[in-house]
Amino acid sequence: MSDLLAIEAVHGGYGTADILNGADLRISGPEIVVIIGPNGAGKSTLMKAVFGLVRVRVGNIRFNGEDITNMRADLVAERGLAYVPQERNVFPSLTVDENLDMGAYLKRDDGKRKTAIYEIFPQLRLRRAQRAGSLSGGERQMLAMGRALMIEPKLLLLDEPTAALAPRLVDETLEKIVEIRSLGIGVLMVEQNAKAALRRADRGVVMVMGRVRLEDEAHNLLARTDIADLFLGA
Amino acid sequence: MTDFVQLIVFGIVSGAIFALGGIGISVIFGILRFAHLAHGDMMTLGAYLALAAISALQLPVLAALPLAMIGTAATAIAIDWLFYRRFRRARPVILLISSFGMALVLRSAIQLIWGPGNHVYESGISIPYVLFDIRIKPDHVMIVGCTVAIIVAFHLFLTYTRLGKAMRAMSDDPDLARVSGVDTERVVVWTWAIGGALAAAGGVFLALDTQLNPLLCWNILLPMFAAAIVGGIGRPYGAIAGGLLIGIVEELSTAVIEPAYKPAVAFIIMIVVLIWRPTGIVRSQT
Image 1 (cartoon, helix red, strand yellow):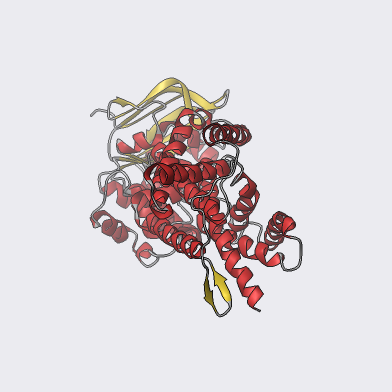
Image 2 (cartoon, rainbow over the protein chains, first blue to last red):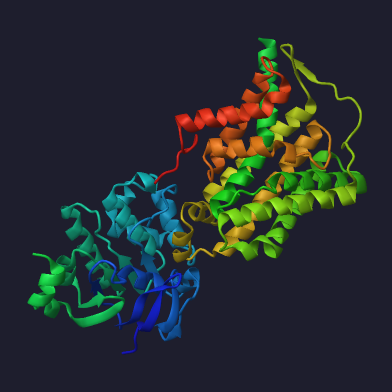
C-alpha cells in the first residue's frame, strides 16, 4: 500500500534553530498513530511542519505521493489534511455553527456534513448558536475536531487532543477518535495521556530530540517496560 | 436642553464619520496586525475622487459616493499589492512607519492633482429642518442615513457571507484560518477593498460637512484611532460604538470647554474606557 503521509529526513524549526533533526514517519491509511516522547522532542513541531507553519529546511513531506514540503497551509488542507492545534483551536468570536462553516470553506456544505458532525458530537448541536469562546474545554475540543472533519480529510492531525481535559472527558475524546478512524480517516496524534491513547491506537512512535527513535505496534509499545517507565507513567 | 440635544445631533454626525474610518482601521489591524496611519489620507483621497466625479460627470454627491468608494477600494488594493504586501512578514513597527510614508505619498499626490486649496462639493445655503427647535441640516440626515445603511450592509456581509466569516475567523486567528483552508491573501484583498470603500464614505461625508483640503481626514486620524481602540482594536462593531461615543462626547464637551480642545477629549475618553475595560467596549472572546 502506498503511503498516505510520508515524512522523510526532515530538519527544520523556528528561525535558525532546528527542532526537527531528521524526522521520519509514514502513515499508510486509516490507522491511528500516536506520537509520544518527552517535552521538547519536536512532536508538535512535526505537525506544524506538515502544515507549512514551521519551515522545513532539509528533507521532504509527501501526501498521497505529492510533495507538500513548505506548502501554504490552505493548500495543504485542500489536499485532504486537517489539523487541530493544541491551543487556540477554535475561532472564539464565531459561533459553533460558524466554526463548522469555516471547516467547510474549501468544500461547500449543503448541510449534510454539518448534520453528520452534530451526530458525532451531539452536545455541539445544543450550543450551535453559542460563541466558541464561551464553550468548556471539552466542548472546544469537540468543536475543533468537528471543524477539522468538515474538510472531509483523509488524514487528521491532532495535537494533544486531551490536554487540559477533565479525566472523564479524556476517555470520551479518545473514543471519538476511534469513531473517526471507523469513518475511514487516518489519525496522527501527539498525546500526553500516552497509555490511554496507545490502547486505542494501531501504532505508536517515540520521538526524542527531533527524531523518531522507535516505531512499533501500539500493543507492543504498551508491553515494553522501558517505554512504560519513560513515557507511559505509572 | 435644546442646546444639549443639538450637540448630540452634531455628535452623531461626527461619530458616524469616526465610525466609518474606525471600522477600516480596526479591520485592517485585526487582519494585518498593524496600525494603518495612512487611513486618514485614504479617506481624503476618497473625498477628492468624489469631487472629480461630481466635476467631470455633473453628478450629485450621493451618486458620486459609490464611484469614490470603488475608486478608493481599488487604490487601497493597489497600494497593498505594490507596497504593503512586501512587508507581510515584517514586524508591525516597520509596517506602521511604512504606512506613515504612504500617508505622505497620498497627501502629496492629492496636492499635486487638486492643489493645496479648499474645495466644496456644492456651494449655496442649505436650509435646515427644524424639529422641536432642533436644527438638522439635510446633509446631516444624508450622512447619518447613509452611514446606517453602510454599517447594516457591512454587518450582513460579516455575519452571513462566507468571506465575511472568513474575515472574522482570520481576525481571531490567522494560522487557524489558514489550516482551515482559508485563502488568507484573498481575505487581505477584500479587507483593503472594504477598508478603502468605508474610508471613502467617511471622507466624502466629512467633506460634505466641512470643506475639502489635503489635510481633511489627517486631522481626524487621532479620534478615529481612539474610536477603534476604545471599541476594542480589531473589533469592527467596537469601532462603531467607539466612534459614536467619541463623536457625541467631543461635541458635548464644547458646551464647557473651547472647541479647540476637542481632540484632547478623545484621549480622555480613551484613557477612562481603557481603565474601565482594558480590552475595549467590545470584549474579545478567548
